[in-house]
Image 1 (spheres, protein in one colour):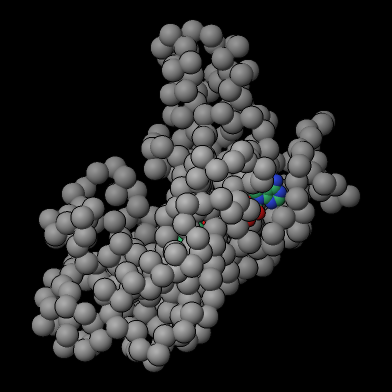
Image 2 (tube, helix red, strand yellow):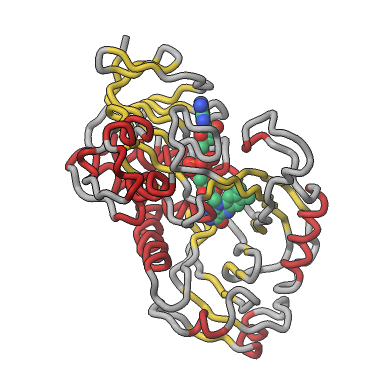
Length: 380
Ligand SMILES: Cc1cc2nc3c(=O)[nH]c(=O)nc-3n(C[C@H](O)[C@H](O)[C@H](O)COP(=O)(O)OP(=O)(O)OC[C@H]3O[C@@H](n4cnc5c(N)ncnc54)[C@H](O)[C@@H]3O)c2cc1C
């Protein structure tokens, strides 16, 4: 039986990017997904790569660093799957003019006259143009990232660890990476509480020319290489009043608004930005984004919550225990909670995680598993 160095569970942006960087370091890597490559949220993504404007803070700095890294990375990886034509951000209630204008990201203000000069199809809008923005083909990208790795279409219900090796549906490996998106963790990780945010995105055909991506409350892409324009995406929380959960979040259909309502909302919001002539919806995509309260993604070694608290019960009272003294699941790592920016974060986080695993480099605190562990342990 082949023994892999790494077994990655979940073939979305997180898992595929991690597979790529580990393989580049000459590690043997297997990737598993019950739905195929990019069968979860990653296959549904827009996939828009846009800056997060506003006054500098830790979160938008992380997003914008990730964006700069990832656009460059994808352009080198698979240029044919990247349309980098920039994005026009139009102010809305959440993102008013000052946030769009006052920041360190290079931008140009386009008034209505200039926008009308670019295309008569634009509605009466003005906005801020950011050059470093793109739209990519998410499924092609995920396939390219994993093309040198072995892929297994399996549903893993259980992981066993024996004599230093993990076994999952007969596949054996020394190390495990959990990149499961909204699906239930395969081991107990109570401090990483994932909330799904469901979303729907559409592809449309139109005879109109959209010169760059446009974003207000939703995004409208430029005309992509396949002739489509992506419009997305909605944000829907689970309607928990309806019924108990009988399925995993990525399969759930109990959301507040029907597909038709969501499609109509997307089309109406797109129409506020630009007139799309001879419009025809060609494909509907649905998925669930994995988010946690802090909005930061999480990467790193998987802390064993119960064993760590048993070893250091005084953590609950605030005693500072260094992270090296915590208990961890052996050779197990996680990369998750990429939220609405899975393709912005994917390669950036996967590189940090790979360097941490192989060279013991530090993971920034705000992204670490330990930060979430301490928070929950102290609240217990
Ligand atoms: C409608 C929509 C639009 C979006 N638009 C954008 C966008 O424009 N830009 C952007 O950057 N991001 C966007 N996102 C967010 C982005 O898609 C996600 O952040 C990203 O895909 C998350 O990647 P992931 O690998 O963590 O999760 P996923 O892609 O969900 O991958 C997790 C995978 O794990 C598999 N899995 C889990 N458990 C098991 C198991 N036990 N056995 C086997 N397989 C398992 C699942 O089948 C799934 O395929 C959007 C998301 C949605 C839903």
